[in-house]
Length: 469
Image (cartoon, rainbow, N blue to C red; front, side, top):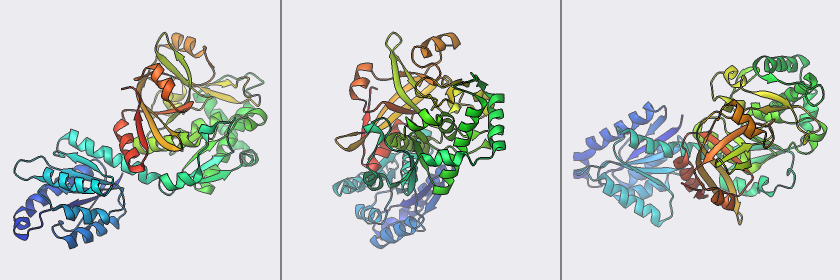
């Protein structure tokens, strides 16, 4: 649920405003009802804005509620300087909404106000039409979701467990830049805390987690790389990280893992998969975005996608391109949330498609790799990358595909079978993607959120780059 401010701007002539006030108020009623019907809270200005004094005072009253987004409603001709004064008192994201009516020229008022705001460089969105039209309402809700995501970042904390992984420049960001651009603080936590605290987790709790996984997933013990003891170590590591998240009030996280933990302790595959899941062996829970290899820009991208969509977010390497099929194999060391196996609200439905295989030779410490093939469906794929120090959001539409067990296995065995796989058809030529994409990691959520990401970029002063399409 978002909190949305709503002000209606009117004509500054008293004799005109008197005759159109009821019309303006009825249009505001309709907007408020539509937004509340979509599940959001609406904070309305007590009075219509038709004087310069009301422009400032009503905007301040709405701003006191700290809305995620403020809407200026234009159902009639409105003096533009009222919008300028109201915008000055409105610190957050702003959208101008107008009717399309030949008698009452709200569209003219919106264009005049929008042009004035452009002149002073005030970022804002514009939507036009009748909110009773589902298409118009959806365009407005795009701005709501984008503003809610940006607001969700402000004042949040990212937990960074460990340092730079294996020399990856793209996994490390400037903490000053993050605070200035996104309002996100970074808390540095040593990976030793995971090791130390995991030993303090109750053996009973670890055993119950293991037995739940054995019941619902397909566990393939080999007596060496994967044993009940190693699986319980991974479960204890999960609980250790959950404890640190609560203690440090972390909103999203990243775990370095390689090479220290994966060589000498155990992999973080169980930890990362189930933190990103909406459940674990103890029941339903909120998802907690967690990026492997402590990839900061990955985690930030994932958090934005989570705040926009509300769904778990997939993390993957761009592992392989099957040129004969024009598809990509997105895979990464057990990192995918198990929710993606079937995208079901029932954990058992997802986990019956999940296999816990012994870790491969990359990770001599052993443990379980969380293998599954992502369920088919339309996806939005995205990644925050940097060019000459400036952030850009690279976005591509695509779809996960499923070819049946036999073909899926043939494809997966061409890379690392034990890892999770998302076979993906992207709406971008391979040459363009490989020439332009600025990282080895990519992230995805079900559905089409390109418009929301574009609005997020406008609000954050991030360059938006659509690949393909």
